[in-house]
Image (cartoon, rainbow over the protein chains, first blue to last red):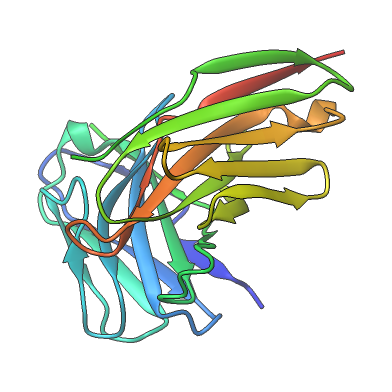
Length: 115
Length: 111
C-alpha cells in the first residue's frame, strides 16, 4: 500500500498562474483533507471532504477550490496564485466518522512557492 | 471560535520525562489528538483521547480532562529521535465535522 501520495512534490509558480495539486489514497478512506503549513506554524485546514462528491470549507478556504469526483482522489486548485499562498500543502485521509479515534494519515507534502 | 494553546518550545535531556500541555476552547468537542512531525516530514498520528483519562502507547501517554478543556502528551525515556514538533488537535463538529490543529510545540532533546 502506498498510503497517501501527493503530486507534485515541489512547484514554483508566478503570481496569477493556476495549478492543481493531486492527492490520492489507497486505503478506501471516506474523509480527505487539505491543509497548509507555514513556517513555524501548525496546520490550517483549507477544505475537506466527507465522501465522494462532497466538499466543505475549512478555516482558510479563500483562493482555493477542491473536487472529489472519485473516492480515492482529492484535488486542490489554485485559480490565480498569490505570494501569500507560498506554503507547504499536506493532504490527509481518515476512515470516517468513527468517534473512538481520529487517525489521519498524511501525504509527504507539496512545497509551493509563488513568486 | 475555536482555539488551542500549547508551549512553543520545550527542552529536555535524553532519558528524562517531558510533558507537553494543551488547552483548548471549542464547542461540539469530540476528542483530542496528538501528532509528531520531524523537520521536513509529514505529521504522524500518535494518540487520540475521546474520554477523560490516560491512554498509554509505549513510551508515549496522552491525557484528557474534558471538564478542564485540557490535555497533555507525556514522553518518557526521551531519545534523541524524539526531537520534533508535537501538535495537539481538536476534533469537533462546529461548522462541520473537522479537526483544528494547534501551532505546535518544538521539543529539543539534549544529550
